Length: 326
Image 1 (tube, rainbow, N blue to C red):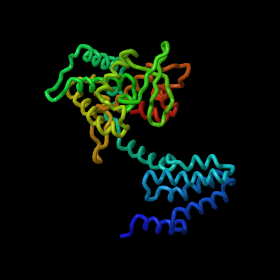
Image 2: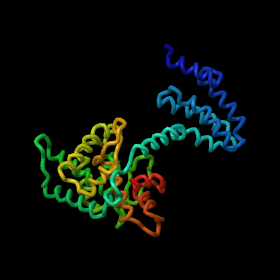
Image 3: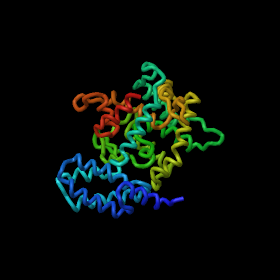
Image 4: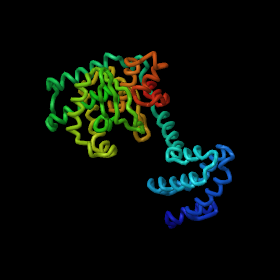
């Protein structure tokens, strides 16, 4: 059986007429110099032709190195459309068609099974849930199972409360989120998903002081400051989501919120099954309620734009529409 290297050489020979990457790179340089001033369409055609060589049978680190080599050729040779070419030869550009296909597939296997009236989430339902959890925490009126520790039970409840109150992502709550206050203004920093900006912070039904206090307690439990995002998810995501599922089974989740969690079906081994309470769903709920609570007619064109602002999407409206339309 041919090795990976032998397969790569064979395919390169068929597609490019040469067998090794360095020779492909030389072909690209010649083609780039031929087309660099002849329009962006030509640049796009070059990308389509040579992107195959960049990621065919390579490891992620090799792909990144290959991209650097192609971009160095572009930088060296300049051209009227140099900036467009540099934007085209990125990891995101290569994988965006794959991501788009995956999102399309996800959209097809996700459907709402309750009518709009049944899945309507009121501001008061979210406030009631947050206040109920806070009361349990303050009075220590929660129950601790035989195989559980009190700090574990508190951590599960705190995470649920903070996810609803702030709308932040799992790893942001456990590690990266920075909440600051100046006067009456709050800001959220330490955001993930490529957003390094600080945004205006909005918290539902909790004070700044209480939010900071419970955030510190949760992080003292998780000890995630030295962990990567993937390590945090591997250790805690399933555990915390299972805890939320148990809350629902024990009647510890507001009925309107529970109806929402179960109304969006999810794919499991090719089948659609009822949704369950989870941290991602808390962000959806925050977007739905927060887009109404924090709507500002002076700066927001509509509620989708409000959701984009409070979620930190920087007005990438398509991202926020997904939260409001579930």
